[in-house]
Length: 312
View 1 (cartoon, one colour):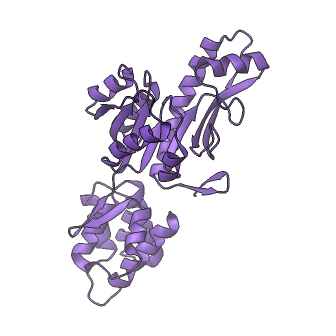
View 2: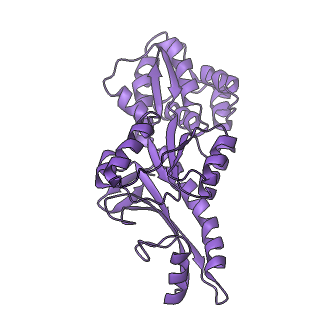
């Protein structure tokens, strides 16, 4: 991420060092103030009328990016410098979740489809995170295989398209998945989240959306894979585990098997029942799912073999 920011800053830096260009540290201060981004370091540099070095220029890009205003900053710069011709600029913008369209830079909205079968408390955690600004994504659709799934009501109450796609009697899994995929593709998602979706996905579906599907499992994988609901917590207690938790992972062709993105732990208490343990794990599920979607939507992870690594 930071390398891409530096590369983008360098592309424009070659323009601003040209003779007669009005972009200098005073211009940067004025622009930052207009963007409601008063920065102590920029203020000091401007008071000294310091040269706009490459390092300071990169710092301004980093600050604008961290405040979610890099697109605004780029549009201000472009008004003066024009758009540099560089074959890699689109690729760099994509990695920073930006785009250049119709003469303007803008933030690319990361689009998420959520698949559900039940109450939708994990869906609600995502909705809350979007509405409070923790997640910079758009939940473009919620789809269920259960007509009475309360998750659909949650979606409707927040203005999110809520779609019911029932399985037909005797329908093969892949055929259902193809109908499901046709509807999903209408919303062009960047990510598909399984938030209590009680269907096993076909290899065809997984291949179509390779590394774009994540699932939340109420145990610390690889332990207790293949179980769901309170069956998981009952098994944890029967085995005598001292800790349990939840796992968010990418989906592959095997059940509860794909690369692990986030795990959260809880203590297993001597007095626990499957119900009490489930309640505490569920709280961690909400945290873990939001964290995983945030990491993915911000382009901060890379998959290497079975390991999911976080970019610095």
